[in-house]
Image (cartoon, rainbow, N blue to C red; front, side, top):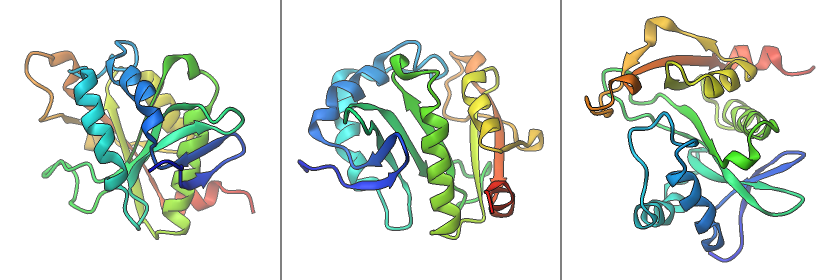
Length: 192
């Protein structure tokens, strides 16, 4: 694919399909120790390339997918934001949908993730009839939990869990906190 297909547009951002030219940015964010601080792994260039090659195929008609997050004024990719099934049986229902993101450090602190995630939440609730969206992060990952709070998501400590895919070699990354927002809560936040 040589032309980006826009899925969602905001005042400053485009969320859309991935292009081969996004490869360097995708490699960078998957190997950066600051970006990946709360993950038990870093991806090699080869692993990042393989995963990037799958992302466009993972996008669905009902709004699921991890979209390239691109700055509108420069067309520069900055990271990604998307919706997916968490695939954590016994922790979340099979039809649960999570929102997640990752951004290159040079773009941190500008509100891009909050802007992108807000647009995806709006699309999920108004166009795809989602009932609720969850998000989760390592307990002390305040950068992510602060975004969740800015999105209007509420903490649900009764849903907190130890992530089964985090190896025992990384005990400090096992405990995850859960935030969620319902369609009704989202609609109550929107301007009339």
